[in-house]
Length: 401
Ligand SMILES: Cc1cc2nc3c(=O)[nH]c(=O)nc-3n(C[C@H](O)[C@H](O)[C@H](O)COP(=O)(O)OP(=O)(O)OC[C@H]3O[C@@H](n4cnc5c(N)ncnc54)[C@H](O)[C@@H]3O)c2cc1C
Image (cartoon, rainbow, N blue to C red; front, side, top):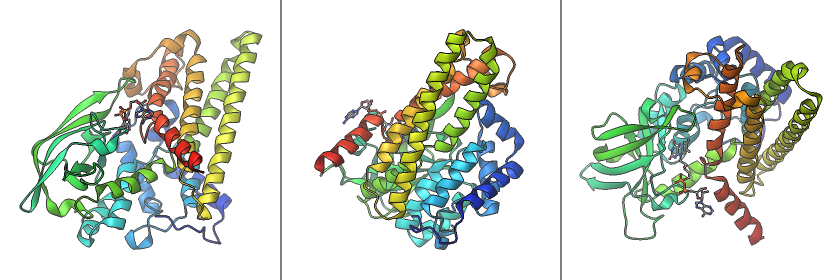
């Protein structure tokens, strides 16, 4: 997926400076304001930024050149993601560029590549991920959504759970059961489904932050062309595993944490004169601990990238980063909310859409934006494979020796 060796002439410091300058010049100020102030981003914010990156040649740049990318090494991709997040660029939506795109250039037919890779690279087609089901999350291989072959179509029936931004999506990459007779991993297939096909219903799920990010998606007699099967029928589990390893790679999301820590420090420094000396000391101690944990996370991430670049990925590094990254995020957002004092109990989801946030002079509006980060931060230890499952993976690998 990535060129393993860094190009010998890759100058990381110079590249990071170029990224900073690009973000400063090209990121829509309205989008930057939202990211910096904890305001809800809409589809246009993400698409606008991704299109700007594409014009620069920096979207899908880790893809091979033959697929339309630039063969970036994992180190270059990491430098880009971290640096742009520090400077308040929105996250890149992964379902197309990081998930189904690599699946298609690795396992897809020539016709599938021609049909879909361009739309992903240009951000003209929004993809969602249809993996989890009501009784198949951690135990994903138990999934039951059925696809039965009928001539040159599959007929799909069932339901997918937690399909993030399915309400914005044009296409879904979906795991379906094509055979229920053998080992459960055996009868799974990977289908591309046009979200406008009759028989698909998308029902909103509003999460604890009061925002509609995710959905339950229902399939009732949905006819999907057999040409949309990726790989062989029954090969879906292999493809799913390939894709999931990709999902966790950059989940430590250190750029956003660096930005957030700076923001917390600045906010506390402003509020410090009004605090009792003991309060100030206690806050400083907690902040120092979070800063040290973030420093350790950055070191872990750096080691992981070095190992990967050297071709020595031990299979658990991404799981370790996922667990520690989400723990640091949750400690940070909890502290930020606590630091709002009594106002920390305030949360109004409508304020996030109204454009008021952390920058507001009103303490309850600021507190509400901090609480959003706290509330939404809870889900990071669930998606991408829960932290308990990551610990199982780490333990199994280490105990095996
Ligand atoms: C906000 C959000 C967005 C999401 N977006 C998507 C999406 O776009 N597409 C998609 O397909 N999925 C998505 N997911 C689903 C996500 O991948 C699953 O929620 C996750 O894998 C856990 O599955 P589950 O919810 O069924 O919980 P379960 O698997 O039922 O787990 C419940 C609890 O039991 C624990 N547990 C389960 N098995 C074990 C075990 N063997 N050992 C120890 N502990 C265990 C878990 O850690 C968890 O704490 C999203 C989830 C959330 C919360």
